[in-house]
Image 1 (cartoon, rainbow, N blue to C red):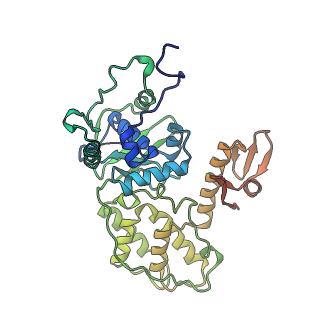
Image 2 (image 1 turned 120 degrees about the horizontal axis):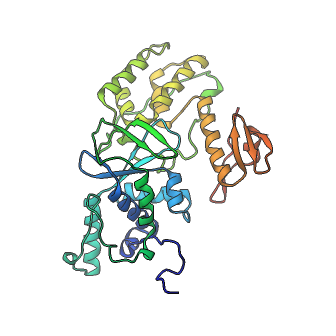
Image 3 (image 1 turned 180 degrees about the horizontal axis):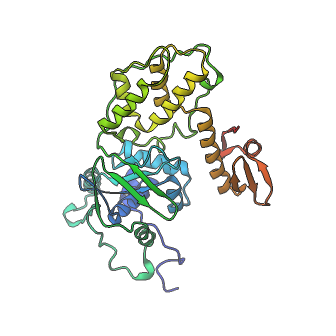
Length: 367
């Protein structure tokens, strides 16, 4: 065995001192984010490079980690250590892709502190950043390429575009063999703070649709809520939403105020679902004392109309069931097992509730 690697597969890079400081999973993911930033062609107005991934993509990159572990690590890197910045790719897609970049200043400060604790001479170390090309692997033989270098080839193929500067209000178009997205992505460095007080949601005597909490099962998870406040809409977009709210035929009439505008900006990704939820409430509830309170609560709690949420739940269940090889295909309200048997979607969702980390997460319903 002449190779330095025990198996032909490509290994991952793990910064050992960084792993001691912030945790193995966090250090591994931070290294991945750093590397993919280097090869990304998407440049923000502040000069930093960004790349985007879905949670499924992260699972393929790090197949030995559970999705919940990846979500926690990304949340720690962003919220606790402040080593990365994350922006929602699009508020209208169910697969929840996010943009990632490294907070170089904080990484540098952390590394300086590690060096001081370890009594390492910082002046002899070369810390590269996302905007520079890495050259620390140039002496490695071809057979010892890391998985990051191998992944870079596929990443470059899916980014067949020239380097571009992404303005805060510029339309971003990313294309891969599986996805074709054309959404407006807005980047800001600081989320807007909302210190307003919440109103009470009064809806006495409404239908059962209002009782349900239309949360995504991962709505409490940090990853699915990453940087939602940082998706900053333009003033024109906010005014268009406010006009839609004015035109909703409800009694009493929807009244606009400062809290409504702050809510729209802060929970921009949840606004379309909240408007649809309010419209459904107007149609189905016996009475609404405060449509403003219903809208604000829907934004904050990600409420959606029953049909829309049920469809989202069904898609999420199907993705999970396909990974578990319970089903192989879905058409309308029918799914197909590995044996080719056609079974009603609702029946299969009752038979096989979603399981994560050895426990039942939810028993979803459809129809």
